Length: 238
Image (tube, rainbow, N blue to C red; front, side, top):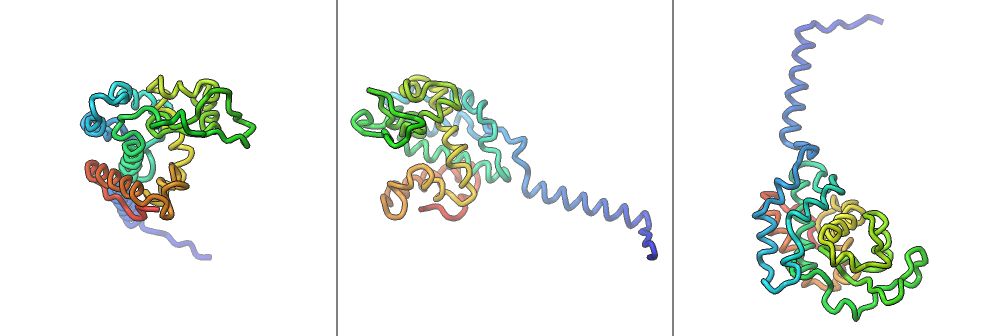
């Protein structure tokens, strides 16, 4: 078979063109490997949320940007997915849900939580302990004994015997939110914001369960996307 010889000048031109195309693609879709979440979640962004909570709110002296960033050290892949725009959308989605769940970082624990039963007695791996309540606590309102058990194992606290730790330690509180997000919400983030609603509270809100709360979450998400200069994308509701 005859060998085709490409002149060196043409070969060099092809290399230059390929490099230029690669550079253009990277410029259009920059990697998030070097994204700094702290540069996106600025003091202005965080304080713009918590600043809307009443001065009397328990969360006002509990949650802070500093404790969020400290917790983030254990979840350094949060906010690093796809392009920089994807990263901003993930951050906007996280804080949209946190805003809704805690009313702008006002609440640490679920309203009337102790009166509610979040014990899944069928779960024998993470059995409920006597006189312990597994109601919503923290930025994303971690609930149910299996979640407390798994989160505790992953983070390093006794979630079943001491679920109140989530309401007493702000760093652990943020870690539970990030733990839940990375394990239960991140896998569906590419399907749109609506899928994240379903992952957090779909059984009660989606498919017509509570359209008002769905819309409120969407409003927060859209607001934060606007603040971060990114389009919210499609499939916003569930």
